[in-house]
Length: 377
Image (cartoon, rainbow, N blue to C red; front, side, top):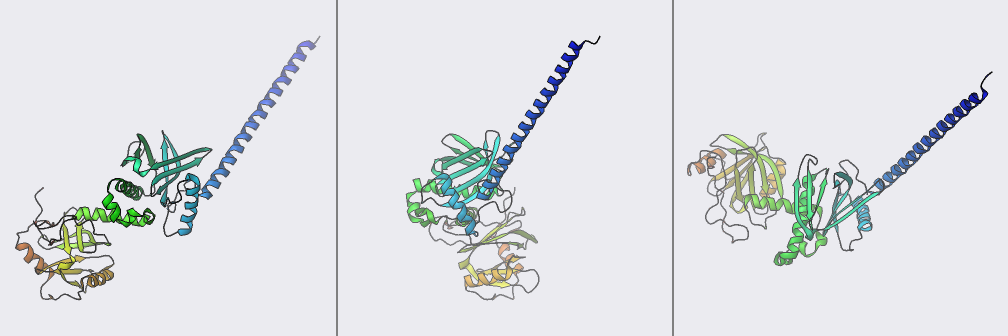
């Protein structure tokens, strides 16, 4: 006789197992639907924030451009709303980057204004808002390690902050350095502050102005020129070195009062030509795009393969008030050889500072270009 009691228990157990499986499947479905719902919400939030410009978008247009005033105006409104800084605070520029909170990078926007460094990130419900006053920055440097290939380290009031994944890290660091320097000058250099219209009115500070000033400072430091000089133009070119018979590749840098050249190919050749010493600006009629600059003392310099050749010649002639060279019977090489033989040159070139040459901020002593051999390594 069948044991109906055992069969009933087996059926009940089977039904219980099936019910449990159904419940488990139902729970799994609910969990998956919940995850999907949260992901959809997060995706909608990310899209919304990207549209608002609060989460960085990768790409070459993810940083501020002064030539796009409409985009900059929109960002300025978001900057003011997000950080609540004083109304007179001027946003200079902003960049896409990551802020490292421990070992976790938080993607967002870095805002550089006249008095503050600010950062904002909002991702998956996590918000980060950071405001650092420039005059509270004790250290600003570029660093790199195993985790961070290249980053900018900002130390303020004993706290270290790291920013990385910049599209143009050198440009960003340059502007940050300029703004931090301005803050220091406003605090400690009262004389410079009063005499500098930009420092006196920070609202005049612009991204392009900061970049130009930084380049001018580097230019003046490299060539040891007066600090008042402003770098106007830079042109790739070659300088002919006759006694070594080679063309030194480098850059011609032009300011209000000087034409300077520095080689970039290891020949360690540099030249400084004051405009007041220039007698004539000539150009060759071949394909070398050469500019010949003749100066007092029957010396000439030949620069070839000059970028923006025609425009440069016209500007230099206008600046010097000259037309064409008066010494067509003397070649550039002859002029340079004559000058170099008088001082016994046999190697590379450099500019040697005469005893009367001024340094930044000193009197108006003449600066004469000299071609002298480099010391042995």
